Amino acid sequence: MTRSSSSTAGLADAVNKAVAGVDDPEYPGVSIVDLGLVERVDVTGNGRASIGLVPTFSGCPALDVIAADVRDAASAVTGVTSVDVHWLASPIWSSDRITARARKALADRFTVAVGNDDEAATCPRCGESTVEQSTFGPSRCRAIHRCSGCAEVVEVLRA
Amino acid sequence: MEAFEGFLDDGGIVEPDDAMPDAYREAVFRFIEMHANSELMGGLTERDWIPRTPGLRHKMATLAKTQDEIGHGHLLYMVAADLGVKTRTGMLEDLFAGRSRFHNVFHYRAKTWGDQVAIAFLVDAAALVSQQAVFKVCSYGPYRRILKRIIAEEGFHMRFGEERMLRIAEGTDVQRSMFQRSINDWWWPALQLFGPDSRPDDVLLRWHIKSERNEVLRDRWVQKFVPLLQGYGFAIPDPGLAFDEEEGHWVSGPIDWEPLEKTVQQAGPDSARRIGEAAANWADSQWVRDALDRVAALPDVA
Image (cartoon, rainbow over all chains, first blue to last red; front, side):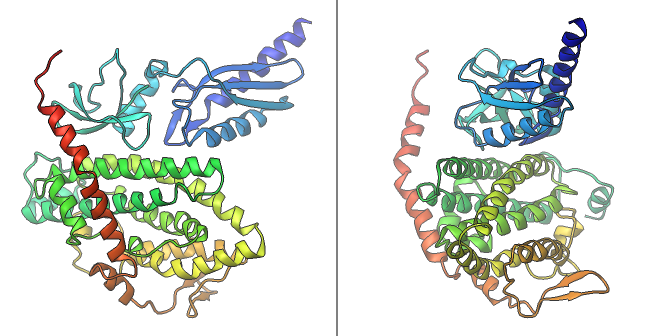
């Protein structure tokens, strides 16, 4: 009994790790787990994995690609017999789900800031505040800002 | 200029407020302006295909790609305007009056879904190959930082392009012959996107605005797409195409550059219609800009 549950826990760990290895298709090197897209990973005793994801916005074109990458990653784990990946209607994603590690990677590697109604974006280059120039940028989850200090054109990932 | 070139040769990155020779400023500006124009013209074409894209999933992808390209255009126009050569409005007015350049491929008309797939597959790949070569060295900081994101997003578009291509390749005979016609029409424009062989004195290379010569990039694209398309049983519309067994290398036949020259003169097969429609869109949306200006001018009541 103990042995079976500990191996289930081991399998769940392995699936979690595999899912954490999936990057956002538009930010190579930034994990979808760190972006707050993974809500639940459940693994049953007989190796059935069920993974619940939350989209940044429901019309995101990357949903299928992300789900396929998650399915592939989880399926590759030894002991996993089936994988169910689904997009959840709740909770609703917001930028406060993004971890400090992903914020740093977005800022340092992609010059992308994070912001929302409660959290003003700051310039990834100089740390000054930014001013919105366009509510939507290349994607509906991003706005275009300009830094009030160094004038850098900054994309802001936000809910 | 000599000191500046030495700085660039050492991998120096130029920021908007740095001192830079006028010729460099002008060259970087022209390059980014053309990229911005191409994103905008490409986005407008993509938009035309939103209602005509088959299937909800791919319709969503077309919608998102349109947003993406208009967004890229927006970012690039801001970065170009910061160079102080032209204002953003000045760039748009020049574009719509046919006074400035955009990529040759947007001077042709996409008539069928096969054409759209050929564009997503062949043309987007050509654009990606040349953007990667710019990103590798680009000496102008703001452009380099935006390119990094654009390249990641274009790579994502490629996944859709490949999927669409596979669907047609594995489709009915009618679909396959439609796609062959699209390859016939788009192979040469896509190949010419790289431009004629780089001149030995090309300042874009000297100033590390791009890293590789046009013919090298063009060749890289040929090596990838000839075997790929042939592998799916499609023919390459180049009667002079040959395989060098010794080098294991595809060699294109002679290239007729006149069609490219025509697009440079805004006299490509679809140039007049494309520019005319973009100009009409700009005029039709004047009321939106006016309304935004009026809102911005209101006293702050909060």
